[in-house]
Image (cartoon, rainbow, N blue to C red; front, side):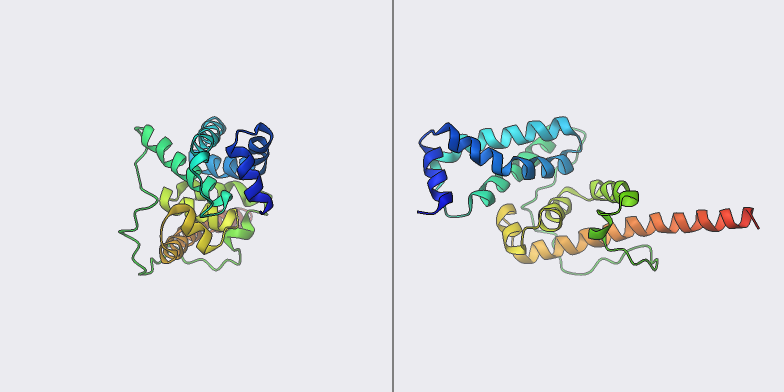
Length: 204
């Protein structure tokens, strides 16, 4: 029996230490994803709590057909969706709906020669807020794929399993997310360039 399966067995039998260990192992990842999907710490905290409550209630039925982390992350993703449903001001989009995942490429509106990659921007303190704002502007079904695949480091196959969509849908959505992020960031750099030129003209 593997260490994880033993942990699950103990948790299914009501072992509070095993349940606490499961929460400890996964709470930070789930909170990070919920924060980016919900947009504020309060909702992220509630989403994380709802995720673990749902998981504990369903744990006796968990049969180990997927990794525990995959199972928990799927619950967390569903909790994010349900919270959006409860928010009347937010449009509802189904993460699992792949009816519009056409592989045809969407071209960005702005073409600026810049060397930054969206992932590396997260390491730049000056541009981190810009990148976070760009991620928040992504449609939920693109945002959740980008978060799991790029920010949390899941593989394409793992992301597909978490969201219950095909691997091709993951690739299409990730491609679209990156194009939209580049479009947003290109606008930012275009504005910075215009400000720099205007500043140079004033000092000429």
